[in-house]
Image (cartoon, rainbow, N blue to C red; front, side, top):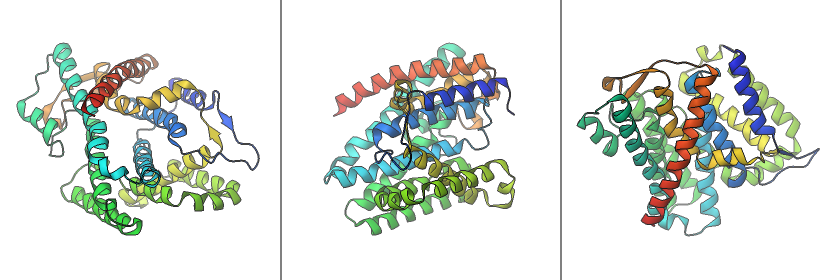
Length: 350
């Protein structure tokens, strides 16, 4: 439900998007709209939106997964761009890409354990620690609930590497698609929560769009007003109607999330987010995504419940402006520190 607190945060979000933004006028376009530099602020704002979803301050909670789908899209998009621009990119992929997502996961686990021990006196059982550090995919294996994203991203990277290492694009894309399809079917079979697989196909969307972006842009530029209006209209229809009740949940998430991604892509060809705050949030977006749950739990009524499937379970959201603001600011501060620490560790490993 929209209230005064929600309106304040929505206004702040719009301010971060529009402040110092550049606009392509008339028929002009930003051809580098999806470059790393321009997409980084979007990732930062998406991480903030995930916090909004998890605190309930803005009614994103029903569709907060679309922001995670956006992360998957940019991952697939970026990998193909690197493969195209760097002929030997995949030769060192396993030794450079995987540590960049695994190291932050381990440091965050340690931070959670230390903080919860000294503040809440929580002593995690050895079984949970072993699962969380070595086999997090198992049932009740995550110490950090939101870290399912890390586990899935590692799996997607593995699919990508073994598919694209020695195969042409068409064959590699087909193999990656099969891998993701098998993974989704397996999750469904073992009754994993849909968050574990509901937006993973967006990784394929990113790969496909990256490969054929130049061809698509020619068509988009020619019919831009029509394309953006149709995408936006369909996205609004899916967001504010009960159409979800008539469609399979998994199928609905694919349609809805890809419509959201389409709106973002089309917007980035016309708008460049130019403020340093959004860029800064983008640089720490990964750590911000992982750490925020800790402060959501500490600043709300929470309790330890190992059998729930993670270390702590939030009993009741408190979405007042003070609590949400504190969650965001504290998360940003710690994420920045851990980001610096992770960079030093990764440099040592290199």
